[in-house]
View 1 (tube, rainbow, N blue to C red):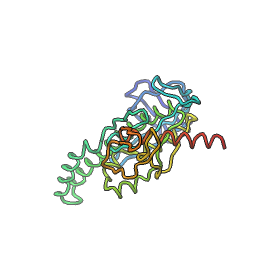
View 2: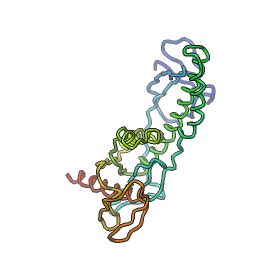
View 3: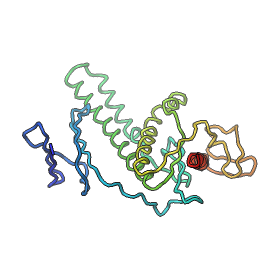
Length: 270
């Protein structure tokens, strides 16, 4: 082994690298799970000048197991549909939401104050650079909070469900066309779907992306009729044929799940 890691004390770990004679003190963010084989270390520096070491351990993958609330279809497949929501991140086909904390919106006022102070400083001065560092540090905190939340949430979904169905959305186009840039980027749906993708592969599960033009919101999940005059301001879906009344996003998630399962079974049969 070219290098080793000592984790005798959680907050006082030491790292030995091949080309350095001295040991490097580390502050571990989480306790390292036992039973893994240490494979590599990647050292990086963020824009605030802080150094990070990513340690890669190899473990035997745990067998995915259903939770108590997981429902299966008539073929025993644990499936769920997710409809993207700017307010909650998503609404699922069971009617539940992710209750995503809007990290950027929480810090937006503080950011505005810091940037206002920066605008009154002389560019290139020491005070200017210190203020820039404060702003960069706050942006790093927001990004880390968002990434941590999405990482845990995507792991939980990929672990418990055999098939996860979502829409194949163009987030960049959505942010521009709907003038919702800050809200779209704050939610982090693109990052969330990428995490779902590789974690589903890790557990041998499937992420199904249905066409973004599929009328999931306009189609009644009860009778299948379409309501083409539905607008974005309509939060309740009232079916003109069967009279079904349901939350717009919940219905979309149900339809996404059904269409995703149809595509999944079609691919399995091919």
